[in-house]
Length: 271
Image (cartoon, rainbow, N blue to C red):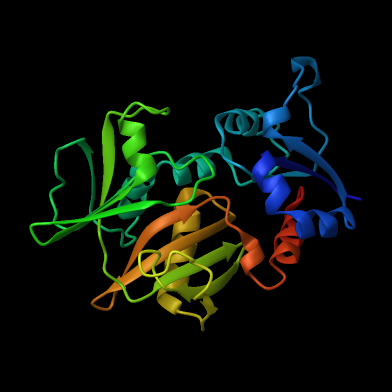
């Protein structure tokens, strides 16, 4: 029986993986490492798991992933590189744009300094903690300005403290397209944008495959070193824009998502 290590925080363990763990434990030996409860003795830093699965993105967990990756024969899904690139909005915007993916215009600016484009949304730079998006919406001289409350708090001396804000050009779109990449499989959904309906799952529906978005998904997973992800796209004037990428997607929105992810881990375990 294969051995699988789960790297997770208390929030995800309590709310997001019940069916996943139940199914996985019927197929493999499972050891759970909870980020907030780590007690790691350096003399016991050798692992006998066949694969590790990460379902959190805190600093301690990132350090633990890096330690595990020193064992060359144990794959980690997702990798340290993938997690770090995904949670750093500015860095992943640069890399995705360089790879030819259509990301909205973006910039880093000190607070009070406007970006070099009109309508914009301010997001936190490092998307690490579990947090519900709280938009602050203003219209100034006909331009739409949206800010995530968390991002403003971070630049106003609430930890973590940043000296800059991440600005992304606001894309007005009828729908938000939610694309899940799980291994080689891609799943397609759409929903009303959160500013239209804050209950993002209320309007969510499964849609037919969009080849263009499937290609973007594969490319993003390749350059970001992700085996499991979700991507958010908006559409303006027949052009899709990749606005967010996530390394710990909630796969419960997909029919049998818990089984699909677990089966991928079993397949990749020391393949």
